[in-house]
Image 1 (cartoon, rainbow, N blue to C red):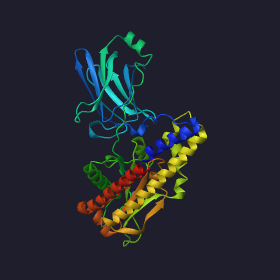
Image 2 (cartoon, protein in one colour):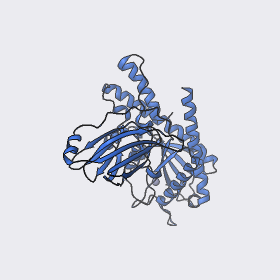
Image 3 (tube, rainbow, N blue to C red):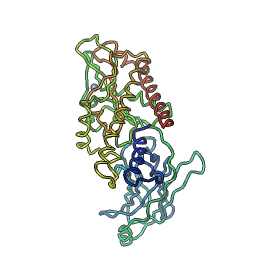
Length: 403
Ligand SMILES: [Zn+2]
């Protein structure tokens, strides 16, 4: 079971036992179970502007006018995945039309996401409603009809909310999100070989190939920490995975060693030493766990939940690490002895996203380097990784069914 889904079950259970001691209604859908927003469109009809937000699941929403020095319409949603025009990202913006000058979207709190419409002038939300798809080809929609108004009326309306939260229909399950991290980049080349190879190029090539192969399976959503030769701070990599609600994080690297004959891939998960750094990394980066959001719980209970989440995440990372080491070997890729090692690495410090680091091979070994450069040989490894991810999520499905 995915960590966050597992967590929800746990929270529900503990919540019942500790807060009420009785059996209650099913828990509200977890933020991470919310769907993806697939498009934001707008068009004009006379003076009115219709804004349509499309998603793959029904979304509860809350719309209101905000007048903080400018005219805005705010649409608050449960935590969604922003996948506008096929690109998954944490935040973004787009051009408007009619009454809307432009729009911006981002995550708002740990459990909510927000779409802001920057208006070209004062307007009110004359109508808002949700539409379920009539055919399987259609998507769920939230429709907002904006009509121009006076500045005075806008200020009046902007004081309060336009409407209360809408009921949410049963959330459908979503695809697991795999975040692939190409190690190094930009001013940080990583390891280099005597022949002029740079680790940052090998990791990027492998990350792009892995993304393509994962997309072909149609089982996953995929996001990259970088898709070009840019520098990214270490701590921003797991932060990005967390912000996107990742179900698995894979960081790709290439090893270097003093002996040219040393070769082989190896898999790293967090060492016990590294686990001690998680709390520090959490505080430093303001990583808020889902369990910490509910203010109604005693602090002690939150701490217990946070510890359980970290332990479950660690177990899942270790399980995936084992599978990955095996599959890389089966794919005909040379692996080091004791391939599944544990290391304290910043990119693995996310407290609630299972994470592994794959050293694909040694850039300092001629055979390994040639294999990482070769598109065909690289694909062997990449397919091994995809096989490992398939096996990992197959296992989880079985586990979930067994619970
Ligand atoms: Zn590296």
